[in-house]
Amino acid sequence: MLYDLMRKTRSYRRFKEEEPVDMETLRYFVVLARLGGSARNVQPIKYVLVNAPAVNEKIFPHLGWAGYLKKWPGPEKGERPAAYIVCLLDTRLSREAECDLGITTQNLLLGASEKGLGGCRIASFSPGLRNVLQLDDHLEVLLVIALGRTLEEVSLDELEPGGDIKYWRDDDQVHHVPKRPLQEIIVAEITG
Amino acid sequence: MLYDLMRKTRSYRRFKEEEPVDMETLRYFVVLARLGGSARNVQPIKYVLVNAPAVNEKIFPHLGWAGYLKKWPGPEKGERPAAYIVCLLDTRLSREAECDLGITTQNLLLGASEKGLGGCRIASFSPGLRNVLQLDDHLEVLLVIALGRTLEEVSLDELEPGGDIKYWRDDDQVHHVPKRPLQEIIVAEITG
Image 1 (cartoon, each protein chain N blue to C red):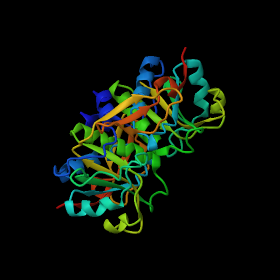
Image 2 (image 1 turned 60 degrees about the horizontal axis):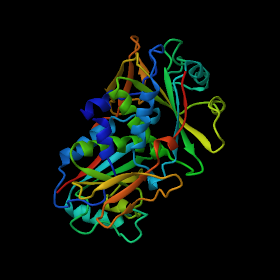
Image 3 (image 1 turned 135 degrees about the horizontal axis):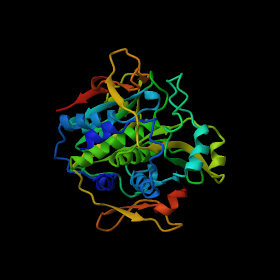
């Protein structure tokens, strides 16, 4: 059911690095991403698919992980992503595509959940990443999706009124995500 | 299956206006929207749910429909949305949330498909809309989702190289959406 799939579709940051994600699976995720709507139907988002361990290793140092976990530098060796899908903006087609980006990556990550995998949107990366990917000038990196078989448990917690939205990890390495309650995000119901 | 659901989740602009969408259903869509991830977990998007015909009627004139269909002023009476979910930015929490907006509305619209309904993201609306909704100053309208039982057939067409991405309607009122082919949006596959 959709509810369960969406609940399961969280940001996962630790993976079984040795379990490969094959190219066909990555391509399926882009098939789903492509099915998302696009503002004015421009479809300016493009993708690089990577599952080569040697290239994964070159991508990894360019990524910033989990801003709120100050003491955690990112997944250790053996727990790093088995694959990446890098989302690019074709700047010949559009100057920005953030809403499109949310749509396409949500389709993509729901697909990952469907296949028993997990991923994480990474918006923090260094400029050197584009050299690793040997991108043409008209392509700009928007987001890196890390993918793999997840090692992590993520708990959605109900945020108390006035509580802190920062995600955190408990001693058992469970990742907690405080979610604003439904009553807080529904401003009004106008019925009649 | 996810693929079929995502394929079905298109922008629909003509509805069975007389078929109501109950408030519980609208609330379920926000339950799904809430399950989407949020940048830095800020969750700044809020919602107004409307299914009151009298208020629908006040919202409608504020909306801009289908920019590419120059001769079509929007759905006629009887084919207008039965409900709206208006997506707002809580500017006390964040200054922008476009990627979040894509994520949450994709969950929402997939939920609509699951329930046999359809919707459309409308990013073109007049400033007067906020008065209809009596919004507090800190809330900014980002997007209006029109919802209802759809009347429209939407066809996804494969875009030819160099073809025009503008959607269009044929004589049978089928709405055609040219989609860039997979080979065009996958820039590289790096495997090994």
